[in-house]
Image (cartoon, rainbow, N blue to C red; front, side, top):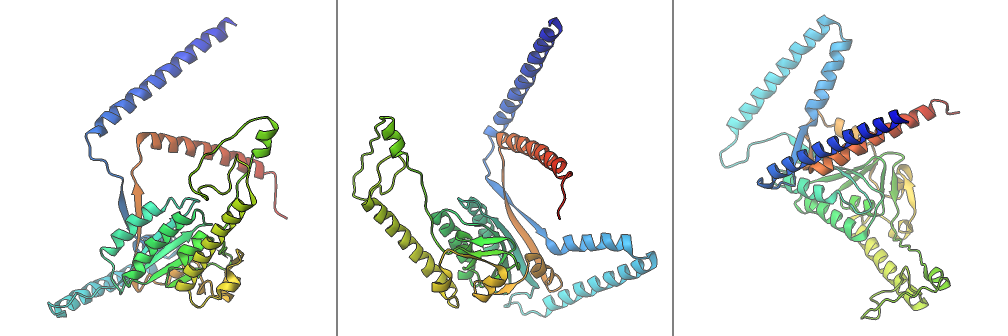
Length: 354
């Protein structure tokens, strides 16, 4: 028992020291950042052509015989030299009052939507950056994954994508997994929608649900009062007694929102039979193609890699600057995720698919 008491005291002291050091470090960092201009984030750009070229070269080095590898490297250098010379010649021959010719550029953005469409903040910065340079001869590709969420949030996200088409820049949306409800509201803004064969598409509908605890409160003799000004300031509530009139108004609002959603889709995809697809149903890629909800069955990787030879392809991402507490929280979350993954792998090692 004496040993346990001493060990407990030692452990308490160690924890105290660690916490004290952490607080001091946090205060020093906060003091150092106080005088700096706060930046919400920055744009990161990577050339996808170069990334694929590096992977291809690594594979060649491992697979090809040395003589063949050497021959191919010489041919590649010769091709690059000729391409550079042709570009220089084209620049010289271009009249001064005309823009210099350039290879088609493709800008790839990614949107992973939650219920609040939180990624819209980053999407806005990415689109603003791309619009400062892109022209009608270029293309913007958005890898979109979302099951939908709040109406006003996805309405804003759709408006951000509309900025691209309003500037006469071709916009292609690629759906590898899901673009439903608000996700499809975003997708339908594009000039073309590509979907993987088993991507989930559609859900052109509106839903709202909430619990009501009025009977529970009444049973326990708990009063709930809510004061409003305006007949329909509140229709259905969580704690109050809901009325048929309130329900009718709530449903009326849902129907109005649904009508707006249907009109929005029809304006951007006139080829769709809106009466057929605006039932709230979802369809896999092949079935969505039959209903003209998408234009082609193709994954984003397939579409992008097919244009590596003809276009300069850039992945553009806005990266938010994280505060120290956010970084510590992220590190803790990653540690927990790794532990859960290890536990799951151990559990699955005793099972098999049949």
